[in-house]
Image (cartoon, rainbow over all chains, first blue to last red; front, side, top):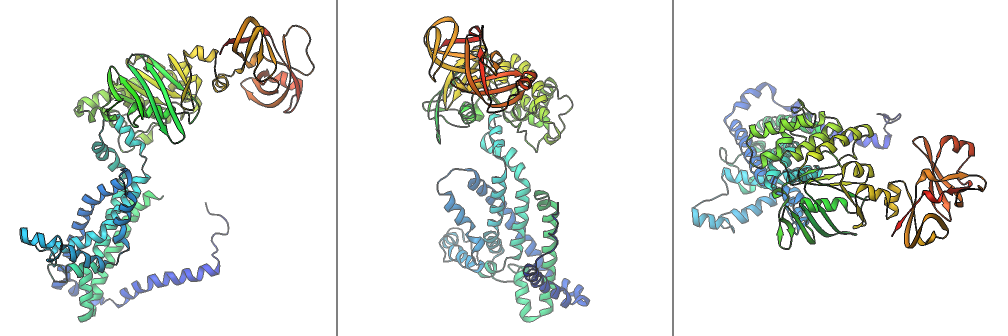
Length: 266
Length: 348
């Protein structure tokens, strides 16, 4: 219910708020205004664009899948188990959230690069080289995006009533069965929201990707790295690529609002 | 003895140390105030919490004790919680079938058993609903069916009626009584409502601050409370003292005349309806007359329950008419009178 008077916003708040809106919205408007609408069709069908878009969608989806398989169990451990050093673990896990992605890329390079701790062993033992491959793109995106999923799912698990898990135990369900048949279905909206956030973050990933995977069309060039490259040679193409990313982002936001966030916070 | 448990647990400031025994087909009520450790006891029996010391044995099988600890999902038990806690993402029938499915029953067989139990608890045809579409009473019935469908050796009921409104509680209590009578295993009912204990249990233990302070049949406990808490619950004024002939010298000061010869430490218990109030000191038959002051009064059915302070603290029930005629208000000076024959007296 609206209290009387809440419609009027005090000036010291209204002016900065309006400026903030302008600051956030104007660049996007600029993008729309300067877009080469007449040549949009041919720009979009240019060979590089489709390739980058396809790789972006594929790698972001793969990174989200990896994040789900590894991140949901991690979130469970953080939210439910009573292992020692859980707070430290949580801090470590969330580091990639605040770490500049380019630092993440360098770090991945030091571990998985040819001279890296794990990379050199992979190279010696199996002849596998990771950097500058599509796999490297997925790894970089997973590194940056998985914490979003973990944080989101952990929050959902904490909010879920743990007494249901007690009930399941008294009904003969061991902890794994309980997780599968009770916990996971109950936090499904949180997992879905986390997955969408994770996917959106992976889709926009730039710093770690370009550092660890490079920018080779067809194998490691994703939309963001393509935008960056295009801006230096053909700015119009950069604008078109940016438009596509903007459209995908808005679609993601709508999906989140209507499908999950809207239901979680009525 | 089907359930035999000696349980010691330290949980924060609560030190629980309780022994309970329940035979097959019997219902034990664990009665006590909030924070007394009742639910902790139940969690230990369920295996949701491990006892620090002691032993839980069911049908001769050690569930907890020494190095043995059977995790909850391997115990043959059913548990009903205060809020029905039906899984919100499953239908009512799937909720009831849950325990059978986890124990390896086939889907169709589990479903048939669940439907059978839904009929037994009066939820015929509601199996396809979501828990959110049930009323509180229906949800608690479904929770009972879910707990009983696996034919447990031990049934644990944690305040199963306290989340229900007064009218629903009445009907669900009556149904629960019927299902408990049919149940062949041991049942432990945790409650803070003496009516639940009286209506449903074969025996009662009263737990206060982690200890058993009284045990017996519901009638015994109701008639001869041993602590203020129980006395209050059953509406008695409990006066500890020392007997000397036909008089009890109260620990708190004052004397009570009683109808029989007593000696040694005793309790004198006074029912509220046997206390009469007067504005002037009454003459004649009553043997016990005390000056008192009215500390508070609340309507209680057709009477007014009056709390009296003074040399002998008492609770008195007077009719609303009498209350009005006496013109009583909190703080009023009154005389409380009780016939000696109306005072129950028993050894401490």
